[in-house]
Image 1 (cartoon, rainbow, N blue to C red):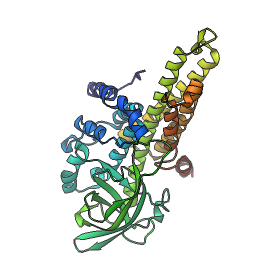
Image 2: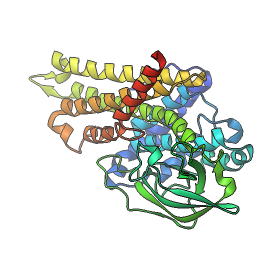
Image 3: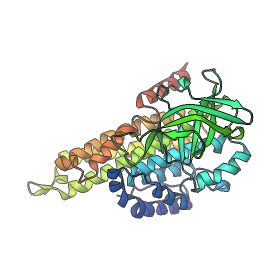
Image 4: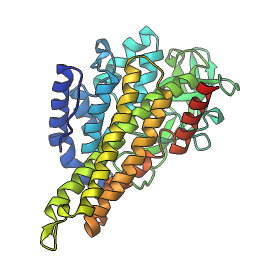
Length: 383
C-alpha cells in the first residue's frame, strides 16, 4: 500500500514518484533472492547513484539533491520497505559522507564530495571497535603523524560495507585525551595495509556485508584529516544523531512492509467461510500495527523537521530511533502471527522482516544507549 505522504514541494513529490518506480522495478523484485544468497547489492547502489539518490540531503554544487532531511528520510523509508539492506546501506553511506560535507575544508569538499555523493563511490563508517562500541572513548585504533602522512593502526568491527566500500570515514586516536584525542580521516579503500575479516554470519540483513576492518600501518596523506586533530568525537556524535534518524526511517519502512504483507494476507486467507480480516480479533491486531507504524513515522519526522530548522535534535533523534525500531520489532513479529504457520516459513517475507527488525534495536547505539541519551538530555534541561 502506498503511504499517503505530506511533502513540502512539487520537486519532492516528483522525487517520490522516481523513488517508488525504482523500488518497484529495480529493488523489490531482487530483494528476497539476494538476501537468501547473501549477495551484496552493489548494483543496487549503482542504480541509486545514477538516479541521484546517494546524496539527497547534500548540496547540489557537489552532486547532491539539496533536499531537507524530512524529504530524504521519507525517500529512505520507501527504499527500506522495498529492500532493507539497501535502505540501511544508503543510510550508512549518507552518514559516512557527513564528516567531509560538514567539517571538511572547501578543498576537501570539492575533491571528495562529487564522487562520494554523486554515485561513483560507496562509503563505510569505521567507528566501532571490538571493545569500543557505544563507549567511543575506549577507542584504541591510533593515527600517528609521520611527516606529510598519518599512519593508522588498529581494528574496527561491525563495519557495514566492509570490503565493498570505496572509502572509509575512520576515527582514530591521535592523543591519549579521552574526549579530545580522537580524529577523523578519509581513508580510500585502495590504501595499502587495509584488510578485512570474514563477513559476519548474521541473523538478518544478510545482503548487507559486515566485517572487521584492519589497519596495518595504513598511510593516508595529512590532508585526509577531516577537521582538526581532536575533533573526531564531536564529528562522530553529530553524525550519529543524523544516522539514528536514518535507521529510524528504515525501521518504519520495514514495519510498513510487514503491515502491508499482513493486511494482504488477512484479506486473502479464509477460515470458517470468511476472510480472517473479517474477524474482530484480527482487525484489532492490524489496527494496533497500523497505529504503531503511523506514530513511529510521526516521531522521526518531528525530529527531522527540527534538524531542518537548525534546532537541537539529539534527544529527538534518540527518541525516534528508540520508538521506530521498537515498533518495527513489534509489527514484524505481529505480521508473522497474522500469517500463522506460513509466517514462519520462507515462502513469505514476514519471517525475513522479523529477523531484519531485530538489529535495528542494536546498531547506531543500542536502544538502552538511546534511553541514556534521552534521560541525560531531559535531566540536563530541568536542572
